[in-house]
Length: 270
Length: 81
Image (cartoon, rainbow over all chains, first blue to last red; front, side, top):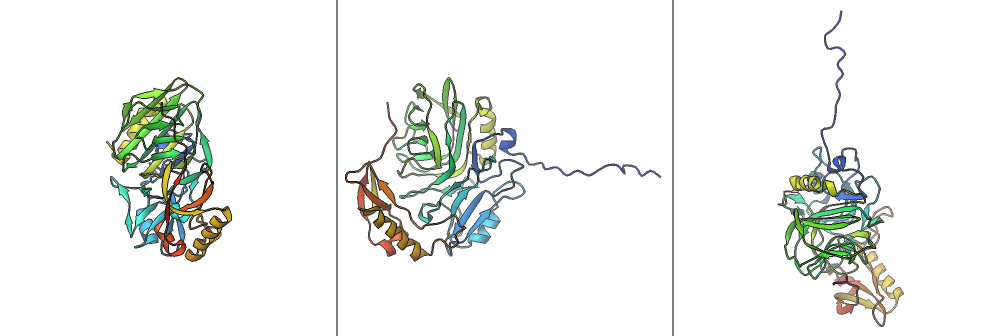
């Protein structure tokens, strides 16, 4: 006797698709959301202020940061980010081994957020930052972006930076890309949640802030620069909150609009 | 040029000693496997004359290192054309 449909096999598939599933091959990728389906690691590692114990915090099934796990671990204390795990697959985690340089993501039991999404708070008179395991050298072709909150003008807001390189605002309110190879043609004082995105190919640099193309002054090659940190330029202070940042060292100029839409759909920035 | 509030040291060893005082006070590291290995870190003002080492102020340092002072550190800035 043949049972109808007896050969049908139930196949479970994940319906989750992250931005790195659509736009793969990132050099580094940090976020409070899951960025690709195959990534099985955590988002961040957190130290709690009550006893300095540390714990990894992962994602919910929907790909959001697991706020329940964060609250359970930290309780009514502060929670400080020791590590942003690299979701690109390159193992390029961004760590901070010094307690007083770790940004809070929970303050007195309250999870810090920007526009409803969790954010690490790098606002400080001191030096809050994370170092990559291995710096990323700026490539001829590149797309780099950050989602966070610029909280003040005339202060450094550098989502990615190094000792002589910056992607973000310097204290003169000029937006820089690489070292001094490219910079915006004017000063900008927009604060609040921003998607700052830069693209480079052999003939062109471009800046976008909340999907608006900013005029740019452009010097000539050689391309140079290296990104080693989240939210720091050299050892000057900075101001801002951090939610997500990705660098591709390949030409993704043609994907700029799609990447922008993906990010904005999740964070609701503009 | 950047202005900082913190603690200045004329030798690196003095800065290391201050860092260790803070580690002992706060019990860091809790475990050798933890990411967090120090409570505070010192920096080198190599562009200043004379050169010095310093720790940037944090409220948590007050009971360990005492009242901070203010000082200037020479830094590089992106070129503006």
